[in-house]
Image 1 (cartoon, rainbow, N blue to C red):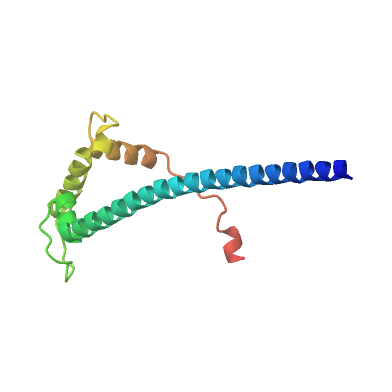
Image 2: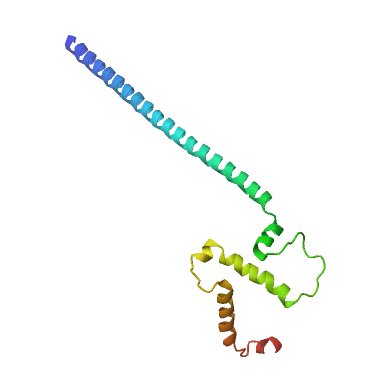
Amino acid sequence: MDRLIKILAVIFILVGICFFTYSRVNNWHADEVDTVLEQEREKWQKKTDKLEDRIESQQEDLVLQKKAITPYEKMNEVFGESLTSPPSSPKEKTCQEIAQPVEAFFSYLDNQEYIKSYKIKQGTLKLFEQTVSQISGNLPIVSEETKDLLS
């Protein structure tokens, strides 16, 4: 009987040691997981703060850009006319009055970086005229497209 008590005591002590070890390892692992999660939270919070600052800055820039250039100022830049308000009454224009904003528009295009990257030697106006000439030289032929419309 004495031997049985000793065996049970040893088993009880071993179970106690195993439980104590398991709980310590489990707590250590939980602490490590909490530490890693907190570091991740801080990292993502910093990124979120940076993105929010960037969005705020871009919104401010957008507001400033909208205030800086009104549509008529942009039209003046593109077409080279001094437009302060929309045309109030239509009037007949001469060919020169029509050609001037068209030429100013193509001149504006020639000064844009995305057009310069194409390295168009003769300029956009000449390229446009050549394109219109080529398209006009080979007009489409209407062949029975409207036949079903009338019957």
